[in-house]
Image 1: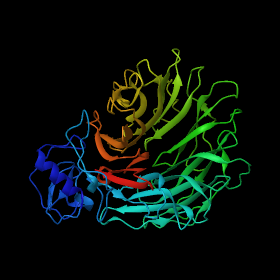
Image 2: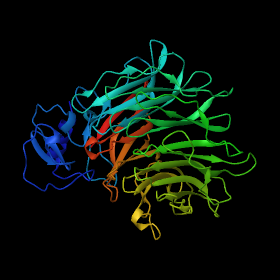
Image 3: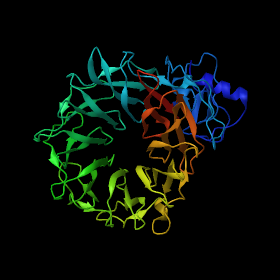
Length: 513
């Protein structure tokens, strides 16, 4: 059972175009065998090119895969047993989906699967990793989605049997990527490369040449188009990093990011220019008795730092959780949480135009209102536009997921759109994540608790305002750890993954086209 069946059910109920990813059809229908036979803004459905995101009513034998519509689980995937067609909630476009569009990708081992992460390459191949115990051995597991055939069998990524945590995955446009995680009682940082064939390489210790007696944490990862990248993490109050070599490349010893910041660092994040390989590492740092500030350090495409640590905030209050996004033109944006003079936390930002020698813009605020805002996340398009999500009260005591879009062409005047709440006003929403493709297509996902469980929500934008939110999963237990990824091209689509369901929990994934 595939998404096509779900969309046929929708069409029988009423005829409409979806607000998610919908475009008008602008030319006569053309015969097709696969999506590559159609224009960029079209899908191949039932042998005919149709508008990308439009209702797809294929032949009864259509097995999904590449052309099954907006939500696509690929072939041969069984969904959870607790869902039928469900209402998408207030503000939606009438879109509903059922369990046929969701793939259960974790092991059926009697143990809970948790902490999923996902990445998508230019061809639409997705890689999902998670933590699960099989035969009494905890491991990082990985599974790949191929547009031509759906989900292939899961493979073990970690091999030692020591307890792994916090897996992260990133992939370049061509299909080379890395999985990085923490492992063992000392939570050392390990990584495994994979190529276009999806085979995970032998785990390597990324904390090369680094001592220390305490556990590492806060591991983050980014890669460029070739699959080379960088990992950052925290150990003993300092921020470290190491370059992840591309295919055939050599390792270096780990280096300290905070070597020129006496106070050390917390909550690091990393982004990489996908074209040049230049890395941007952000972190919060401050004295033990004083407030934290937000710092950034830039590297060249090699291993040398291009600059000293740069302070981005301009406030005397405590800053936290900086997040960074970069595009291939060298534009970059950093967002973070920090109170203003009213003592309520705001979402702040600083922007880099990307010109040679350019300086970071003075910090400004994104969020508005009188309630505290927190947990910002950011993604950037190829032209320098960006999208920020965060959590903030919509009504007293009810947290909502909010969004605002940054317009690079409006820098110097009013670059941010008016903040808009994406989540239901009745739900105490959280766990928001955003993915933005180079073309500017954004996929936002978050969790909304219910009285008897919870649901995963999605909303998308094609560069303009977000459409209505859509419920893609509901269960009697609260789902956790949603993650989202968007491929480097619109044809690649995106994926949302999460952990949930009755014990033992499973990892679920759904394709968003």
